[in-house]
Amino acid sequence: MTKKGLKFITVIVLVIFLAGSVTYYYNQVLAAKPKAYTYSGISDLYLLARIIRAEAEGEPYAGKVAVAAVVLNRVRHPGFPNTIAGVIFQPGAFESVANGRFWSLLPNRESIKAAYDALRGWDPTFGALFFWNPAKKVSRWIWTRKIIARIGKHVFGR
Figure (spheres, rainbow, N blue to C red):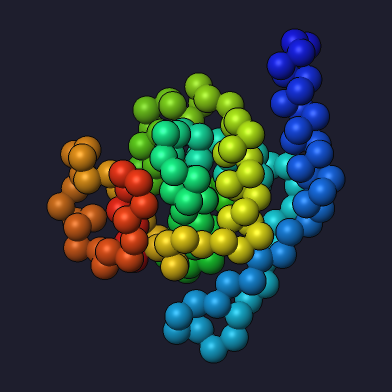
């Protein structure tokens, strides 16, 4: 194993050790009671960090956390799969999974930290279920979504 690979694994193990099992409290705008969600294990953190790196590389830190927040918001929404893996690998859900970018990049320190912050409850999108880059070709349907936030090059909507 290379020094770089060993360093990466050490960082992941340290993050998991420090994080333990993270409980995320989410209060939907229309929900009466907040629900607690517990994500544990390396796989959820790793998948979130990987989708952040693939979808939000070059974006400000809040934009990276926002991408993870969209994934977590979808997990809680009845119209989407109820796992992080299910949301990320839902056909057509993320451009980076479809075009292979997700598979070609490993998480870096910043994407791991952003995933951790999202799991701890930071949602800079205030409940967004979608995000897109208006500079890229997108379907007209996405523009029918209510725009909640603009962070970096991405627009976030519900």
